[in-house]
Length: 130
Image 1: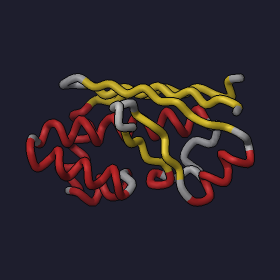
Image 2: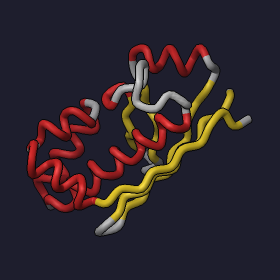
Image 3: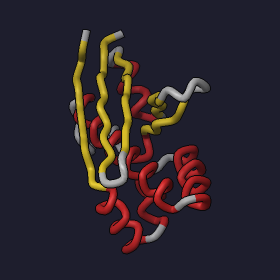
Image 4: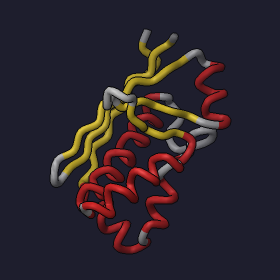
C-alpha cells in the first residue's frame, strides 16, 4: 500500500548559484558522506556532472521529505537520507539515525527515480507500507 508520494524538479543553475556563493559548504550541508565522496569525484572530472549530481540529490531529498509527510523537519534532515546506487546502478534510499527509526516504526520503505538534463534535475519518490 502506498504511504506517500513526492516529486521535485529543480533548475541545475539554481544549485550552481548556491555552490558559487557558498562553495562546497553547500554540498556538505545537503549531502551525506557517501554522496559527498561521489559528488567530489564527479566534480573533479567534469564540474557540470558534479552539479547535476548535487541537483538530483537535492531534488530527491525534497521529494522524499514530501513522500514521508514530514517536510524538512525532524527526524528528516538533509544528511539523514542518502540516495546511493545498487551494483546494478538502480538508485536506492539509505537512511540513518532517527530517520531510520521513523521509517521502521511506521513500517515503510521508499523507492526513488532520478533523472537530469543540462538544465533540470527531477526526482520521484514512492513510500510504501511494508
